[in-house]
Image 1 (tube, rainbow, N blue to C red):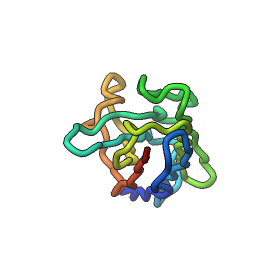
Image 2 (cartoon, helix red, strand yellow):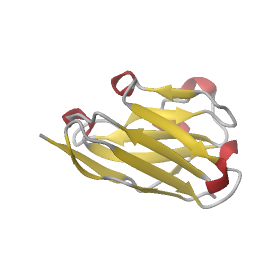
Image 3 (cartoon, rainbow, N blue to C red):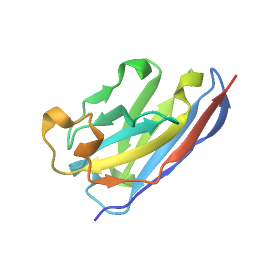
Image 4 (cartoon, rainbow, N blue to C red):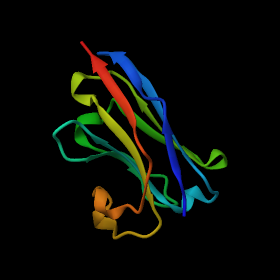
Length: 126
């Protein structure tokens, strides 16, 4: 069972940048579909960005397109989320999630993922 650990969250002013990291406890992380989700207070957990397993194509939610970039480093068993031009609405707890088996059409749904990190808080201030 893979364990995921997020890091890199913090407090940043609007327009600032942060880079989140998600590191897995085992190798072959590239064989997992890996995505970032976020959850703001009082809201549902939502898809942010991710990779499908063994693929190179990246997927983004519309609110973050052009501002966020997801990348993976197979040698480090890690996936990163570079967040630029941060907005107040980006304030949330950010979670890394992974799964080896999923129905492709459910890729953006939290219920499709078997493994989750504990999350890292991102707070954007005005």
